[in-house]
Image 1 (spheres, one colour):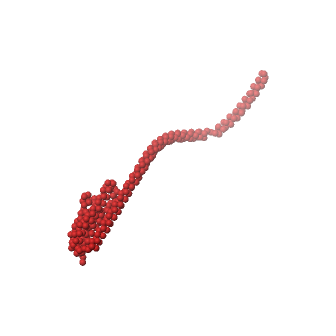
Image 2: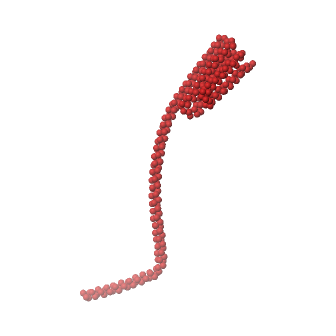
Length: 292
């Protein structure tokens, strides 16, 4: 036969666990004090509901189960707060500064510790009142003591492991910060060197540009002078060609046959003149001989 009170408490456990998860996950939307106290309040209220509803369950095992669930509720919130903290580590947590990171970390650790403490306290307060209505023997008490001892041992071991992991994380964080600081200094030194090299390159480029402008001006001036010289030479060549053409035309207009005949006649007449001159010289020689 299904126990309705047990079903009700199971539903309350799921409802309160879901409510605690939403409160812990959305801490930034609440006031600091409220976000810290509300998870403890949920465990406390759940403990009161268990105390009220567990009476006359008519089943010792069910009554013990529900009283133990108070502690499990607190420990569940402990795990949820740590899980949310680890989730924050992977989603923008490192965008905060060091003070905010430490504050956020210890806030979630505080929730995890206080919810477990409230769970243990409420469980120990509610358990005697609920189980007192049932007859028990030494074996059941010893069994309960062993269970409680095991729970306390697991709780202690879990917290020690958690704090060891947090200490390792913070140490790695410090080491990473030192490495990042060293790399940042190296980067800034390299950037300064790059800026200086860029400045020198810009200066050299400006000097080269000025020198190139001067050479281009000189070459343009020289080219202009050469162009004028070439133009003058071209004009002189054109005048020479025109003069040559005129001389050729004048030569073609000279009657070369008449000139040749005149030259031949001049040669003939020059020969006759030479004969006369020779004859005259001979006569003069004879005269001189006679006079002498």
